[in-house]
Length: 404
Image 1 (cartoon, rainbow, N blue to C red):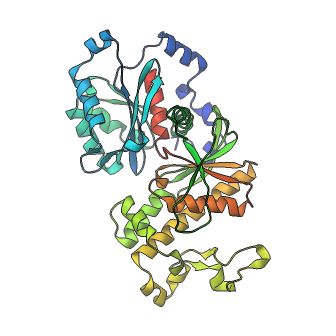
Image 2: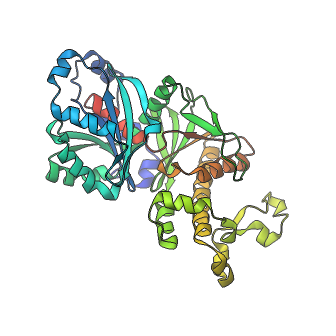
Image 3: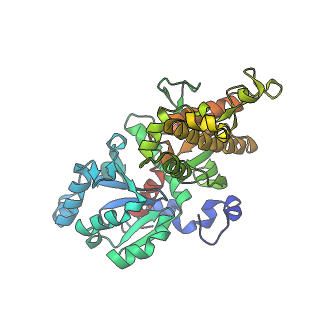
């Protein structure tokens, strides 16, 4: 959310227009490469402080000049060692080692890109780490995006004397998608994929690589605590066209309330073993197994989410797993409906789903892929990206490199 603007304002405004100060121009890129703009000192990292998760992307330089190694402070070496030698930080921080990008080139340096996450409600733990590892002795400004960069700005300043340079989250998202897709290919892996077997079932999903080098136009659906949907016409021409407050935070919050689960991973695990048809009322429950044939509604289509829960008998039969699965189906179907309507309205065939809601969540990926194919008669294609919810943090990292 951009402060001072309503959702309608944002939906009708190109983000490249409202965030010119955060846009990387060809001149900025040239000056950074040629050294006329001073690069930010190491460590280089970007923060995306979301409503549920904080994502941190860290660039680990592999080769420094002898002069740079000589000048490198001991605290910087300790930071590098701490971030790259651990896969867990405290009880909640995690480094997703399977997403690491190796030997990438970033502004004249070759290095590895590391992806770290922790719950937003554990911000105090992160700030304690910043103090203990002496981050603030090396740099006094963190490049950050997401709503939390506003929420925690004063806390960072007052407690650790660090300024948060707030970058627009949707600008960072698109920058991050473009950057990661290019560098994933260099690592011999495809960042973008579709699902080869979208038909609903319990078999493992099969990923089919998709060439994302020239994807425009596409609709980007960013599923975090809430959902933003963007029309992307080019790398620098994109706008937010709609969204919904019913996102990953809604699923997790309701799941905690109704099933007493403790973590997002627990919620997904419950849903994996549930049967949503014991909670949802289907078209077949109303029209019979043949469905509503006049309008092409198969009997398996959900007619009323949680519609069976008005019956005491059904409430007694529904398990925690069934409720979690129904919640996941409800939220995912709502997101899918908004996404395909946006794509049809703007005449776009490709719909790209990103965000941490999709982490360890093949159920929703399959539902989205199936829905896009089914409701468009095969004309719209659901696409997914391996780095899911880290693109905003990558965009913030890119803002860090040149101090923009």
